[in-house]
Amino acid sequence: MAKVASLHGTTPAEIFESGIENLDRIEAVAAAVLWKDGTVTAGWSNAEAANVALMIDTLEEEHRARNIRGSHD
Image (cartoon, rainbow, N blue to C red; front, side, top):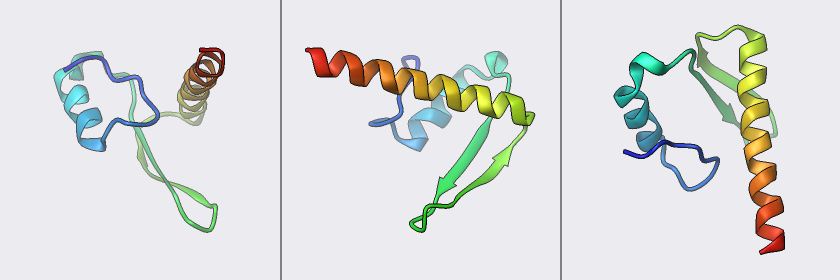
């Protein structure tokens, strides 16, 4: 499976499959749920709070870069 770097279009199964294939390279894992009332809860994480924040920031940066590229194409 190719490297998964997606906020949309990738299924949870694909993400976990990629994780299993690259288990020796994984530093930390975090799972979260966004509820319809706007609250966010973490289902599970083995990461320190600072690392979870870094993971979120990295995904946000990727998301913004894709949106900027998409708006200029």
